[in-house]
Image 1: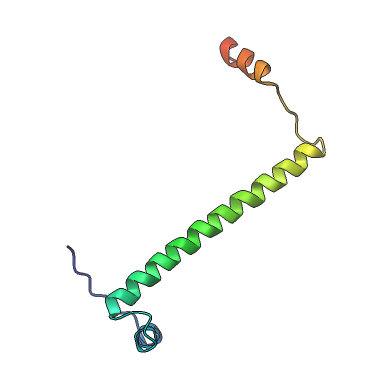
Image 2: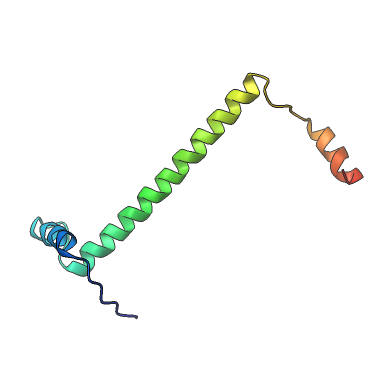
Length: 83
């Protein structure tokens, strides 16, 4: 296992102390691990939200007739003919 020394700065060190004092984590390492996992989850949720928004926009454009659609047969024919 690789050991990493990180200088976080006063506000982050205070936040870690507070997390430990409140009993949410037992050690500094545990608090940082939990923060990293929470941040990773937040990123996943944001990415999912952006995908949902994009799908909603595309579906609205399809319903409004702003986007040309193609049948499966048209796509299959296009692919097999090399176009």
